[in-house]
Length: 315
Image 1: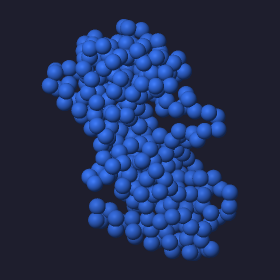
Image 2 (image 1 turned 90 degrees about the horizontal axis):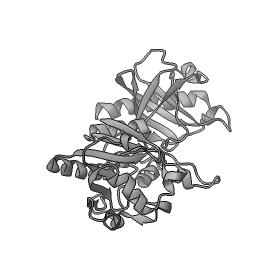
Image 3 (image 1 turned 60 degrees about the vertical axis):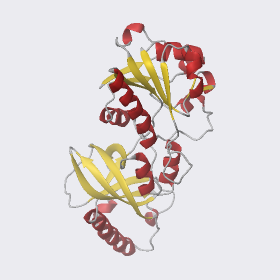
Image 4 (image 1 turned 180 degrees about the vertical axis):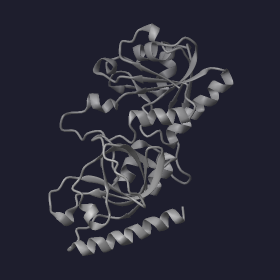
C-alpha cells in the first residue's frame, strides 16, 4: 500500500497518475461499518479494474473546530493502526490529508474539485453520513450535485446489527468501552480492541505483591476502557502473551494517584523497559476496588489470575 500525505494546497505532481475508486471517510477504529464502505469500494475497483484509494485525515476534524473547554478527542486507533487496517483490507493508495484550518475552509465545490476530481476518482464511495466542505455543511447526498457527472457516486447505507436501529459507529464503540462492555465493542469493531504504548518504570509495587506489571505509557488522545481489571494479551517483539491488565489509580495505596495502565504478563520473566508494545482488551473481570489490606488485594489478584487463565483455556 502506498501512503501519500497531503497538506493543503497540494501540488498536482503529488498525486499518482491513473484513475481510482476513492473511498471517503475519517475511519477512526476502522470498525465493521467502515469495513463495509471500504469493501464496497474494493468490489467496484475490481469490477472496473481501477486502483482502490482511500482518503482520510491525519486528525479528527473536531480538533480544528473544538473550543478550548471542549472534551479532548479520544481516538480508537492511531494513524499507524489505521494504516495497518487499511492495508489488511486491500487498499492500494491511502491519502492522509492534514486537516488544517485552511483545508477546513474549502467550500463544498472546491473540496470536490480538488480532493475527488483532483485525485482522479472515477467513483466516489462514502457512508450515508459523510460530510464535507466548510463547516461540513454538505453531506453525501450532495456529492452528485458538486460532482457534475465527472465521477460516479456510491453511498453505502447505515450498517446496524440484526434487530437494532442504532448504527455501528465510532462514538457507540467509545461508549461501550467507557462502560467496560468489551465483548460488544469488539464485536462492532470486528477485531479485539488494541492500544499501543511504551513500557516505562512504575513504582515496582506489583513485584512486591508477586504480580510484577509492565506500566504502559499510552498516548493521551487514545481511548481507554473503563477503569477496572481485564483479560488481555500483550505483544512484545513479534509474540503475543496472555496477560491481565489494570486501568486505575491504585487506590489501595492512597488517594489522588495518577491513572495508570499496568499489565501483568502470565508466565513471563523478561525486562522490557523502553519496549514498544501493543495490548489487546478482551474482557472486563471486575471494577476497581480499594482494598482494606495488602493481603486482601493479593487474594483478589490470585482470583483474577485464575479467571484470566480460565478465559484463555476456553477461548
